[in-house]
Image 1 (cartoon, rainbow, N blue to C red):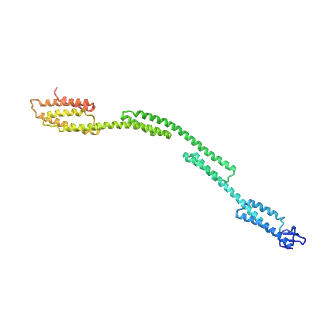
Image 2 (cartoon, rainbow, N blue to C red):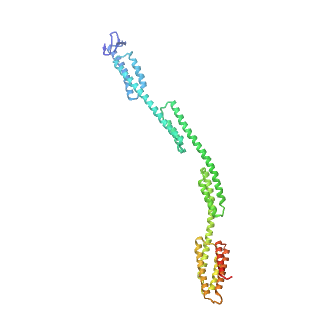
Amino acid sequence: MGSEFGRIDPDGTVFVTTADGEREIGSWQAGDAEAGLAFYIRRYDDLATEVSLLEKRLESGAGDPTATHTQAEALKASLATAAVIGDLAALDARLTALLGKADEQVAAKAQAREQAKADAVAAKETLIAEAEKIAESSTSWKVAGDRLRAIVDEWKQIRGVDRRTDDALWKRFAAARDAFGKRRGQHFAQLDAERGNAKQIKEKLVERAEALATSSDWKDTAASLRDLMGEWKAAPRAARDVEDGLWTRFRAAQDSFFARRSEVFGERDAEQAENQKKKEELIARAERIELSDPKAAQSQLRELQSQFDEIGHVPRDAMRRIDDRMRAAEQRVRDAVDAEWRQGSVDSNPFLAALRERLAEAEAKLERARTSGDAARIAKAEAEVEARKALLPQ
């Protein structure tokens, strides 16, 4: 009994038909020939099913192309001795095509791996370039240090580089990181040295400020303290905690001096304001002197002048106004005296008496000026005395 792809002889010998002719594949003695053919055809179908599974797994991407190639190659080799009845030529052609597709996928995967490796190497080289740039020029020490640590984490996520290449790349990155660490260490060592020097400079400034804090030479000391403030601002900064402590001491010394000066100036200003008030009261009295009796008026004026001169300094902005008012009051009395003299008896030589009286007034004014200790006022009074003396006969 036979079929297109094989037969069973009456003696039970089984043959499969191939492109090269019939090949004996076994013997069937278990039943009729039809059952035997069905048995060997099922074995062929099983073989074809294995091929179909390999084809589908490869096509879906679920199968490993290398493993598929190995299995397909083994199946292809087994066809020459396979005890099956079926279209072995078709099955061989399918396996040949399957091997070709598996080879293509193996090559594609190899290319993909190479590309992935190249991409991974490129990604790590990009990180290396960034690290080298940081190592060369970055001065944002904290930000740069944080970025280098982040690069390590990113580095670990990049895969697909062979061990040898990865080790070489890592050495480059590690060298950049070490160079940054060395440069940062040198920077902070220099900064520590500068801060130590700054500490010494500012400690001396503090000592000078504290020495001036108790001075009562208000003008020169205030100027010196302002100069010290300029030196402080120009000096380099020490470490933050040291800088803050020194600044507290420096500022306290300045505040102590200026607080004392303000207290003294406040007392002086209050005293001068009170002096101004007293002088204005005397001036008002001088301005109200009754002139009907010039000699009595002159006597009252002298008394008021004496009191006026005994009163201390007034505020600077009031000096000119106070002096002008007092001179005007004095001139008012002098004018009255002069008028009386002009109207007096010639026999009594009123002119000479007036000159002598003016001289006496000038001398009295000089005495008051000397009592006040005001050099300018003394010089002016001396000049007036000399002028009065020049008018008298020798």
